[in-house]
Image (cartoon, rainbow, N blue to C red; front, side, top):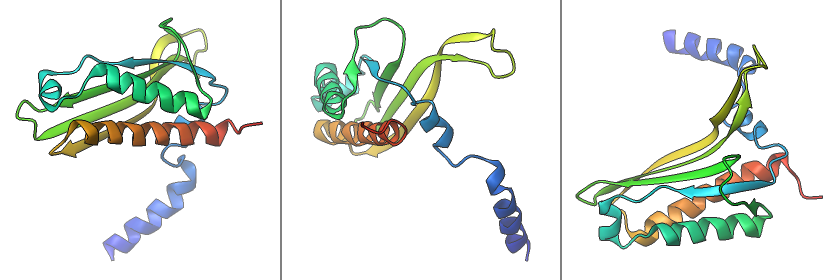
Length: 154
């Protein structure tokens, strides 16, 4: 009975809260270009044969093919990618986020030069270099699908 009551309350409150990703996706409206920043890789990644350059190339290619311009580092919109690999090489964490400037609703005079407005984080077990590259490409596709959903091609 308690479980049914909890579901009723959750369903009743659901319209009050945005769906997961809805706010993140809105932050992509009007975005036309990003800087791609791949964090330096840990030693565990080198043991797998994973390189920062390969990841940078993979990501930039996917973005360009979708129509997103790649810009030089200027501190504006940054698609940030971090890969952490356990020292024993048995697990990896991949984090992808879009950082961009933001203003607070409650006080528009407060400007934040870099805030994470879209992000995905995944764990990979028994990773390989190609497996990590594929996971990153898949997450970039998720980003691009969100971007395209609020910026339809004309």
